[in-house]
Length: 490
Image (cartoon, rainbow, N blue to C red):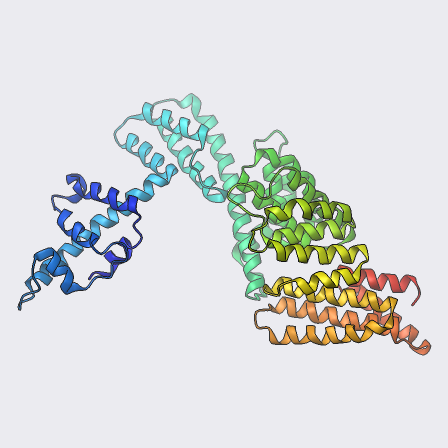
């Protein structure tokens, strides 16, 4: 049997089965061929469509193939014609679900028939509603296509006095498209360069924008310009992705610009911009940014952004990010309230595990290290990233307990060895996590040496090593512990 036909029919729902029966009954689509008997014969194998050729021939023709293979030849012709009508059905079904393209083809049809007034009215109606539009740069491209059609209608209807407004709107559409597309593509380049360890920075789009005088553009852009706030937000994101030094002074205004623009964004844009800002803050940790990140998270939650729209549950990664935002800002009360409310919005399959995860962090920050270890013992070590975090938290707890009683030093050293084996043996741990894990162990061993094994004659040497490590690491916990030792003058 024809594999293409079988593959398509296997995707048919019960509604498709009924709709396609109506579709082939229409002489307009079936092109004069009657496919009803052929289709009904195929449906005898619904929904699995495990069809043996001889069995099908007997159902359709009432007999098996003859010696000359006459029935097989007829079947090949039927298969070819039936494939075409199947593809027509798929195309038309998809078009009905894609509201923008249905309307765009409709106004093009009006244009071809010279129905300019009707076409113009339809374009203006659709531009004002924007129902069924996509998002991101695809949405901006759709607006450009529709606005271009509007311009043609006005020109053909001799409405020249209205043309300037349309041209100005087209200019705005092109700006929005340029920035939306660039943000998405530059972000893709940035993400993939980390995934695939690309070291070169010669991508054409990056080169182009790095050579634009974007600060001059922003300086000259009128505050009363349509979408001024969104354009400013787009430019800052582009500069962040390009790591453009000229715009470092603008990064500190990310919160204000996003919050100021928030109400003008649709739900998908709100989410996409939020994640871009949060990712920037996460990648550039500092005492100032920790507080900015925390305020930003509180803003998003106050707006009901998580979960919302198409997102049914708060995913584990986002839950972790919000949890740590509160703890890094040392607002344990807020974090406890966050966990109490939002653990109910986490996927039920991982709810209990994420609660153990969250409580292990909270108890550590409250100073109850044994209780934190108890929650870690209840944690199911399934997801590598969260397992990594729990093993780090185990080390942190044993270090704090060793400060209270050196009996815990043996537990600490054992946990370090276990963590090293995890980094070495677990093939699912990314190279970035391996490197940061090994750096953490180096820092932990330095802390152990400084706190528990230092001799007076080595004091200056260990102090130098601590200061050097402090200046190079980005790990917030290690920074705080080294700072603590240096302030105590070892």
